Length: 404
Image (cartoon, rainbow, N blue to C red; front, top):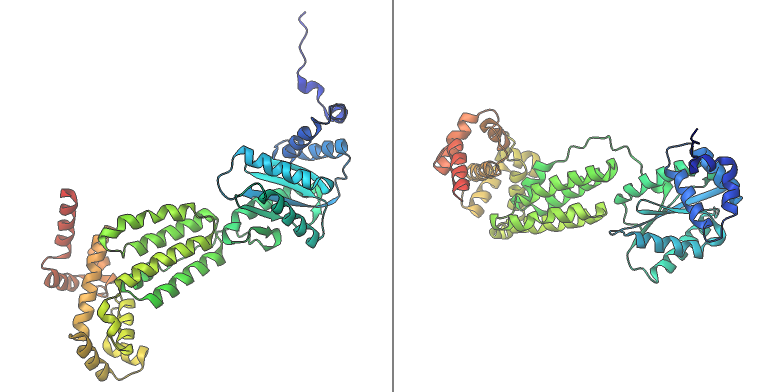
């Protein structure tokens, strides 16, 4: 009868594993130790038993108070980078490391240095030694104090925390400072209003709305991928206000947002582009208007969709001035009366909406430009202003696009 061959796994049991490791040469022990701890952190089997083997084999108390430190290279990382970081820190900190390994793109250390000041001092020491030979920036997160047997859960929490470090420019993060929001809160950004203020050249209001947008994102703290999606939608709204010859170049900014590592980095980029586009859209002659008329023009641009917009409303509820005086000053500085100016601004906005290709219905465009439910009247005004109806204008645009 043929004898059944035994597999290696039949011999490597919890009982004899410690003996097997101890009998190996010193050069093998660190490799086995590192691999065993990785299995504890990421394995799907009986990880509690694996930790027991680890502690028994290397003489470590599973209840020892410890902290976990995770290091991640900010730029693209290679295996050689992780190997260098792991070896450098393990040599510098050999006296107070309980465990270390690499997991995916992270280097993981566990230290029995539990004092806050000492832990931070050790981290800065690691940075110093690594930085002497390695120029890429490294983001580090360290945990609260916990027993060694809880390090698997600590590891999962810190990895999640590293993801949320998107909301911080700090290179060293503490677990207790990270907002581990579930990201379930829905946001309702004012994309349309921001687009209107940028398109109308209202720099002050555009910057205020953009600041509010990023404050809301930071407060809700959705997962970084979702946060970037919100930011991309904002950016697309802003660059739609570009002149036609600049939109293609502006679209390249989408890649910059996708590759950004922090929310602050995205905010700086979008704010700069928004300010540039807003200033381009600010009519040169508007710079010479009186303060009162400048404020009036900004209020008009913010309220083009409001079918209650009127000179009396602006004078009485927004600027607290005499309506007749405002009307005369408006005609004097702009050379046209208030209603004619508002009609022109609304028609230009309607043309932009049609040109955007977003598939708005005519009644939706009418509502967006302040004609409420009176889409028929809107169409009449649009045809008088442009020479064609909104439907004809849209078809002409489609025809031109097909020819080009």
